[in-house]
Amino acid sequence: MTGYTYAEAEYLGDKELLARIRRAEAKSGKKTGQRYTRDENGKLVTHRVSVSFYPKTKFSIEDQAPDGGEFSNLRELEESEYEKTFGLTL
Image 1: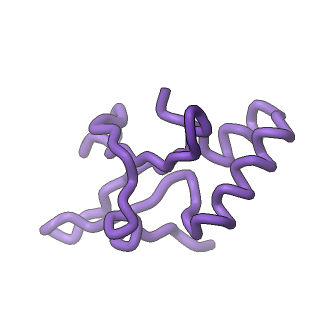
Image 2 (image 1 turned 90 degrees about the vertical axis):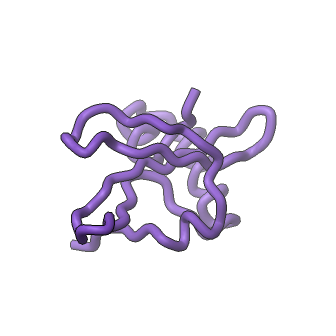
């Protein structure tokens, strides 16, 4: 299991899960959902940041295929890696 993002919990309509995710985000300073980095050519690379709660609260990150396909390479999210990502603002 990769965990959940806030948007996924919202889609599921799970208010308890929404609250748990928001508390975990506030405590850690990390946001779930799509995050981005730039590759060596300056092209955007999409990542998915999620949080799981069992057996302990843990944030994970995975990378989207360059063609916009599936996400893969699931791993525990390190602070240094999160700091290299950014979200898009409207």
